[in-house]
Length: 94
Image 1 (cartoon, rainbow, N blue to C red):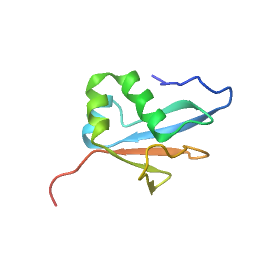
Image 2: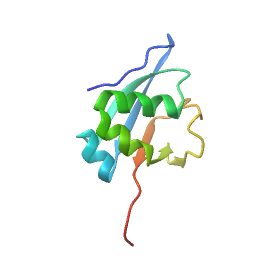
Image 3: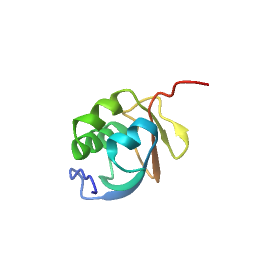
Image 4: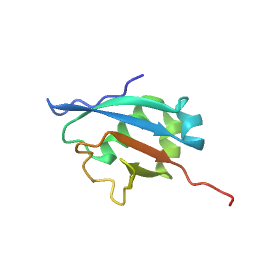
């Protein structure tokens, strides 16, 4: 399944890697998505939740994200030229 947003004529491919509960909810460990060139992290998260359904959408509410291995502090941040979005649910234990 390749989630897609289509608000911009320019698109970019983003690899999404899921971990732990996000991986279970998405039913995959990794996928590629097509996003408009002006997409934000929030746009990507919304597309993923829509594509995979309510279980993943709920998990995504609690997740942290890395965009090309840099922590995302603001989901309105542009995806820009990033190649990878890591989806990290809260982890328990030590």
